[in-house]
Length: 124
Image 1 (cartoon, rainbow, N blue to C red):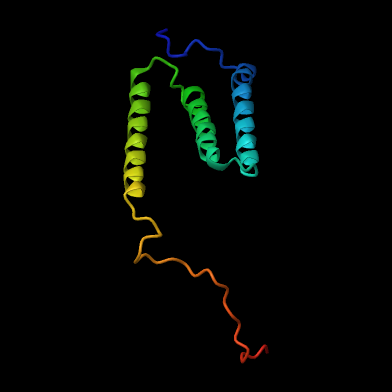
Image 2 (cartoon, rainbow, N blue to C red):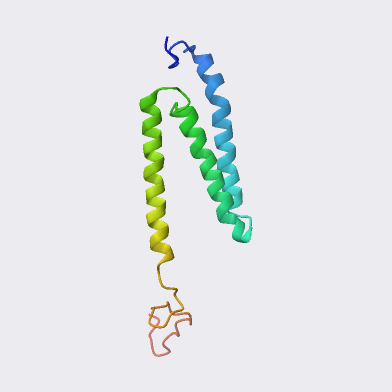
């Protein structure tokens, strides 16, 4: 009718053909995230993890939330959620970047020396 997807085939086989490749890519990205946890990449670990997470979010938003449809209300909702996430990231970064480093005098640091057992303590 008006391009919102009402004329798409809705039988079971068509749904499987449309969603199975997307699901397989998402499972592959989850496996990549799991493998990345065991690979020491140094400073590149965080950007790669965020890139994999962003790819998963884009796939879910476009394919399962139907944001590729030309429905203006869906696109407005998706844009508002992205704006809200941008605000949250900006406020979080503003908090983290303005904190004092832990090496500054007067900050509390955890004890690093091991606890010495008391030789006078009874074992039973």
